[in-house]
Length: 214
Image 1 (cartoon, helix red, strand yellow):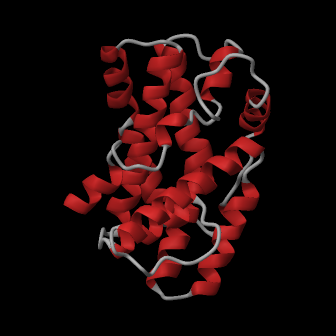
Image 2 (cartoon, one colour; image 1 turned 90 degrees about the horizontal axis):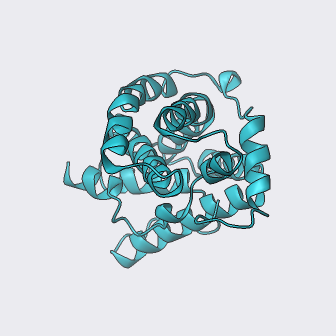
């Protein structure tokens, strides 16, 4: 349990706090304006973006690592990197993956693959090497994402601390649903279709005033 908490902690030095994954752009465009609209944006992102692709890809990466299948692991890692629609989203996953890989190496783990790693790949490796069961590890991965999104909303909307906690309470039950579905989805069911996210992310690249790197 300690390894799960450490891997899910905001203190994990991977730089997640510096990214909003287009939430800041949605705020700038007036799509997210208050706690209610922030909840809708974050909940839909969890369900339709992470739930339909990122979470099931994480499952495949962890399964490939556990099976000692480097070819399959590399293929899913490359596919996830290629699925990032904008420069910012690609840079984000590679920077976080690199940072987590460096942390593992610095703490005595020498089994991390060479080359570029997306963040889901690095996280799947870390969870396996730290002996965190896959369902719990994925739950922690998604909760960390949710917490980061809420923190971004607190800073950029802005929202109060109590509103942020209410948002976490409201969206948190959906993580269990996403985790359960992620482990049962077939390859042909995976989807990266999120055109609004791609548009807002590309617009964020030239946004004049911003707090976050994505």
